[in-house]
Length: 276
Length: 334
Image (tube, rainbow over all chains, first blue to last red; front, side):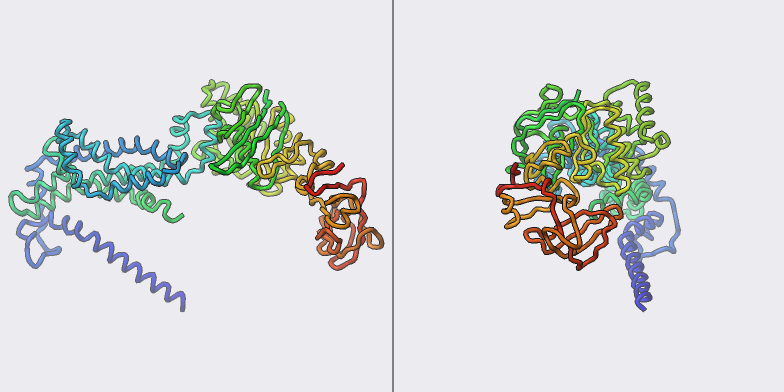
């Protein structure tokens, strides 16, 4: 009796999980479907779900009108560059907080996180002026630095949690074995933390890829990534939902595929330390 | 090579003084055991010698040189940790090679030493495995192998056997003792197990609350404990400590008599008591006896064939030649 109830409950939970999953995924699905409709079908009321004339026209128009590859390349450089730079700074920072904590470590961690609570637009003006002064406007280097800085607290936090799981005795053993601080981090800590570092890299790559506020405000042409590519289809010439959807689909496809193949790592990364 | 001198060394964590200033000399080639109950500061003392903790005051000299502010890697000491602390991502071979790699030793020399260490520790067949694929005893051997290839001036062991099961522990105890005989290098060994201390040590340092209670050979500590704490801590089963009227008869505040120094009989004796529990080990029997004034319960060790059971009345006679007397401060009276 009890067992039957449990099975029923399980089935109900599963159904519920699928329903919620579908609701969350629905906008993406709708975007992808719309990208294969004609403009007229895209704004048809009532909306057409599946029985429309499938067409690839939007994609060819988008491809003709703008250089997708250039935006893609910028996205890769911005997301990749900021993630690598951020990790290089965050590993030593997380090391010191995890293994030689001081009285203020907890405060510093909280303070770092608090910078994420600040509305980005609040510092837009000073950053914009800085960029003009330094000649960084619409440059990849400038964007890499800004994206790195906004994601740094998250990288440090994630690595900190991972490093905390590594027994201190192993690092002490390395020290007794004659390893310098650099060797200790390079040969002992980093290889042991690889799974954690990998999921941190991945998450930050995705965050940087999707970042739209700074990339839209600080770029124009040269450094514009895929977020700008999507945005360029939104307003000026009226609403072209099908083309906008095609552009969006092209922009999110790479990261969606990357995320799909690394979901195990990602889930572990996001829930790490939460259950222990 | 390997004489370690502690000169007024102390350690505080914040406002808490865990080790008040103490002096200690460990001679070259000596097997010294730090023993004491948990929290007595023995591991901290070892970590101070290793350099993993900074001293609050005082000096540590290794072979005459002041090593107080020398980083751990440069002290020429090797350490074996309680958790083994092997590098999980490296093979056994790479684990053992790690200190040599850090010392930039030639590959040839490294291979030679790895081979010698593996042979001595029965690890030859496991060199290409990862630590995760080894048993506890094998992991412990790898940790020892990693320590010996450096040819350190002294070995530091931090409760290395406490993660092993009882049978393995006895075996490893012998192996470490034999290793000491073979290498003739100074070893400092931390344990809370007085049996390990008694069986392995040339010199035992008994610690309590960061203070050295007594330093001596195992038999010195057994025969002439300096105070009540050492008397109760060294020896298994524990010494019976008797207070009150019985102690006053011997002009002492407390008297101590070891379980093996009491004759037990079912017919006559000085003290009378009732058997609580009789532990029959085969070779010996430990009897816990209730009703002896000033000592509850009194433990007696007798031969394995002595058949008594719960509730039996027995008579006890202490061997006065082995009686220990202590004053009100707990110090030994001669």
